[in-house]
Length: 344
Image (cartoon, rainbow, N blue to C red; front, side):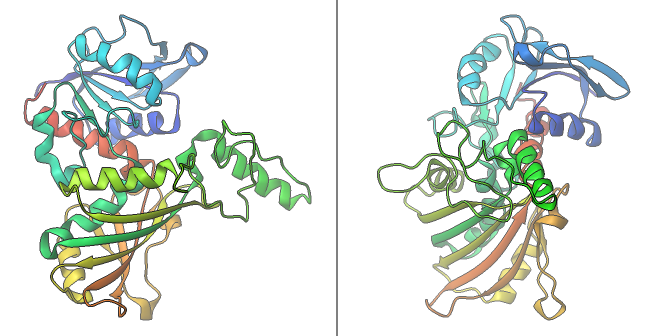
């Protein structure tokens, strides 16, 4: 079996750490692994397959000899370094928003549109975490019945805002238990002047607002879903909310379909779908919850029921690990497809 030289840019972050775990767990055929980050993180040591690897500061020579480069370091970093990695001969799988909507850059969720991988010109984009979790659940229903409208409200874990947001939630909860107040410095957006506590709170803002009153995160779900499903006119309305959960995003989704589906038909379709686990027994109080999805690969679907307010409507409750399937796992699955198809 051929082995591949792999680089991870952003190796010291939460998604980078998950990349490293997944390459081990899934026995990805790694020949050499190069860990890259900003100069301030260079020199750190990270274990991989029984060895300690030293994190290097990314530079002009970082991608020489690299076959696959996994990027998880922000859009600006991706725009700077992805073209250079491609020039060096690597296939870049980018977890940022930099290239997702670019024409000629496949936006891929393997369970949904793996065939798009073959269209790459050196860069393959990994969708937004909340988009990935939603389309894994909805694509099988779309194929079966034709979705014509989606209304989604997300309940997104602090892990989506990075390690600083995770640490802030932890400290705020500990401070509350001590009878103290911890400062809010990260959420909803670290670069803005106003911040709110997330412990015991919900913040209905993820990313910045536009002139219509929607956030960038909400528009990502709209435009990315359309591209992945190949439905440029699909009607989608999204509201994204940050919740005091460490890991795993949840989504309340209402769909209207061309062909009417009963809840049982929808369950059967989803039970047979790749990457989906149906947990849907209300009488036994069985339904997806973020606490139990954390660290798991599938997207979990439950609370499947008719929407009586429209002729062909369904409601679903969908949960998935944002760091895993919503980011690192999806990218590693893309890398596996690239290798299996010989698309390097």
